[in-house]
Length: 207
Image (cartoon, rainbow, N blue to C red; front, side, top):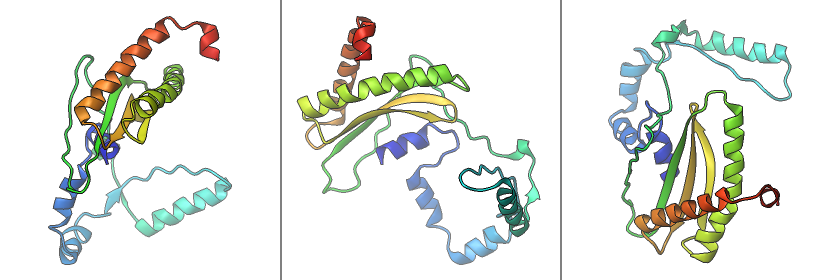
């Protein structure tokens, strides 16, 4: 749930699930038929297809043409399509999203700490370098916060790209400690690892 909340927050046109549910609960089937289906729903649009796997180009084209004929959408200009973009934060800024627990029986704390690298576009070198860094950090992060500090069973980190905005996320779920404690533990880990990496030799990195 926490990862989902962060993902929605970092895309400019995303709607939080609770707000989406509030909106959907006001719509019954008759409203859907009269207000949406007979009005603008599936009247205009553009389709972008990505076909991969054990399929020929002729079969792929046939699938696309069949979809076009069934939907019969009027063409929609590119400039009229909602622009979905990732949100790139300004350097040096930080934000906190707090989501309270919805169940009294759940006493876990969970944090998703998202550190943005920035807009990468087609910079494959930056993506691969960042991926190597996160592979290097994942094992010691688990070992420190899970094995040594015993904060919780769920401890991991990974890179994620949202609409060309690259981030690194550190996830911890703990039944013993608060979110504030987990964030401090994550920050302390990263500071320590940064100091280690500064003095890391090529031989040590390869092993």
